[in-house]
Amino acid sequence: MRNSARSPYTRVLACAVSASAILLPVTLPLVVIPFGAAPALAWKIVYDPTNYSQNLLSAARALEQINNQVTSLANEAQMLINQAKNLTSLPTSLLSKIEGNFSEMKSLLDEADQLAYNVQTIETQFNASYRDFATSDRTASQLVSSAQQRWQQSVSALEHSLKVGAVAVGNIEGTRAQTSELVSASQSSVGVLQATQAGNQLLAVQARQISDLTAMLAAQGRASALEQARQAAAQEQAREQFSRFMSGTAYSSSSVRMFHD
Image (cartoon, rainbow, N blue to C red; front, side, top):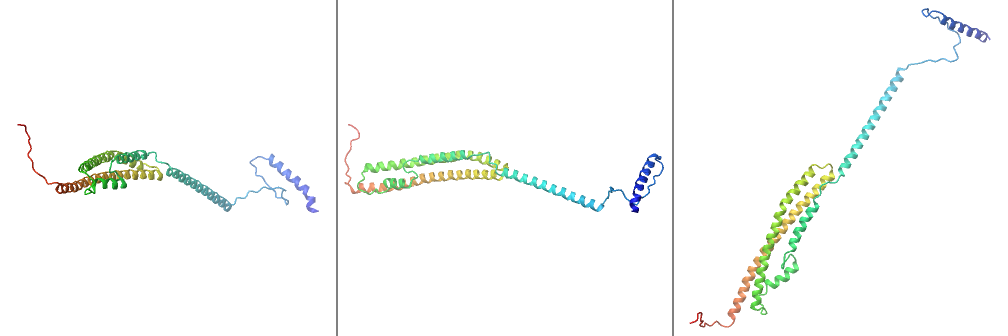
């Protein structure tokens, strides 16, 4: 009852004090008389250094995490760029030229006539021209014709060997240019795929070189073998013809008029 009776008085006194504070000069000190009862609403700002430092540390950690995520995304983007470079195809392709050189040499090898590069053909024609001279069914004219055929085969093989060697030598300059171009492409490649493709094409150039060398050795070997076979067959045929001559009618001398009287 006592507190409630004094409450109106307290409010009136507070208003009077506020009015007097407004009317007094600014230089005069303001005297605030505490009252027993506080106002219904009071605003109080409290500064907590510990809470502030914790909030600042949390913000710094969040910023660091964001920076790490940005760095990670940048690394992933660079990785994708590198993968795209590794999948980039080589702009230089010499496969058509290399295949053209293969085709040129293959066409030249196919031009080999008679005793060509075929096992069955060689076996059949070799038996007919280089063996069985002692058979009685071969006449002297057939033996001469066979000797002439062997000579033609030997000459043709030598000519073919020269042509193959000329083509192989002519491909050297093309091989040099192709090798230089592919090595430059390999050194300036931007990814693994380009370097691999350049290496594969270099291997194709080397394979073509080996093919040319193989063809040249085969042609030279063929020519040498046919010449040696021709010489051996000529010796065997000469023995057969001499044997036939000696076993035939004895030779008798006769006078011959070379000039008219």
